[in-house]
Image 1: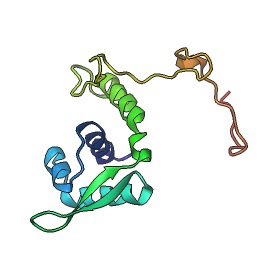
Image 2: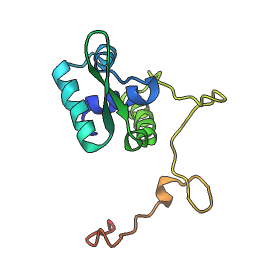
Image 3: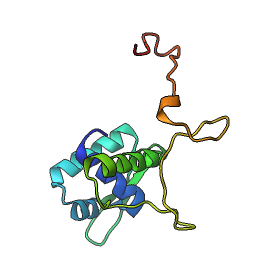
Length: 138
């Protein structure tokens, strides 16, 4: 996901419902070889499924987000807001809105137990059995 086109492809799939290779290519302006490589990788990694579709001009595939791919929504929202603030300040090119009421959607850290928003200075990272070499910065 650390590559420029990857997030844009996922964003178009999440928020615009794009599934067809040609639609991704036209709306993003990405080179066909780069797009093909990214979509193939998303399928390999389980972010998308390639589904065959019969068409008048022969068979083609839709690229449909899996549950894993759809769960990138908060990541895309958070990175978009970060970019709007730090990388390209000014009027944001994309605004996320709640479909039911039209309110702005923002990503934030929330405590699972009390439900309160958590500021960055109040977050602590604790090692698990899977990460025994974790050390807190001094």
